[in-house]
Length: 271
Image (cartoon, rainbow, N blue to C red; front, side):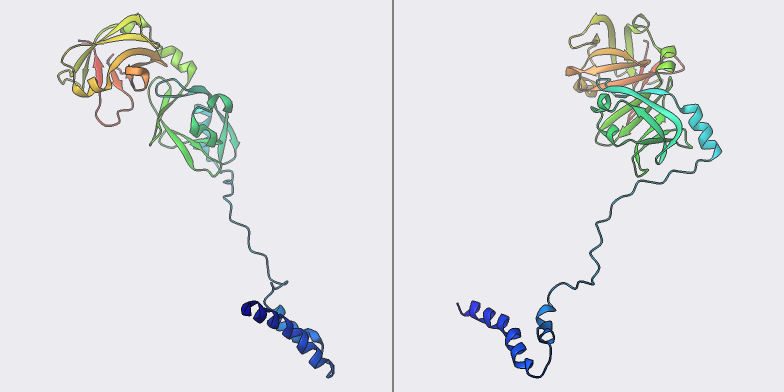
């Protein structure tokens, strides 16, 4: 109770002082000014609003970049490595935001999480395609692969492909071209680590059946290849349940190589 009495006396002091000074003609305001000093200064500037990340300014593109953009701009198909998630994705040569315009069906691309951040693109001097966010930062960088396709490896996310459907049609392979026996080796000229047979028979869950010979490399057996399919001019070998996929791209010598390599290479050639 004593604590609250002390507070009451403190609040009463300015008024008491006012009455004491009234006879001398001094304004009460001067007496209570110290008590009001604890209140906010009305002349003080309000705190600055929290900083926000502003969109990047439109870039000044040189002639070489514009020429590369005109050459690379086209309708593409963006897809995950296993082909389970895909959507149309067009690169335009027109300036937009921090780079050049992109046009795609966002609802259709919703399953590809990073696509929600993409607002523009730019060709890189190395020949790759960079997809940018509103601040001009690279969300995914696609390097040129085979058959008019580009591939990107996003850490902790997976491998994605940009494929030009018009170019892919010219490199599309037929089932009868690839059915039969294939040897898998770690490098050209090395002894095979496994032999697989691509069958022209439907597999459970989609694609075609695949047989694995006895004596295969233990790592491949853990992967458990059970089916194969064709997509965008590539051969996709699927593991048990379809969750894991190895993608093989056609080579100039007629063989196939895992793409991207991601460590140890894996080649597929006829016995």
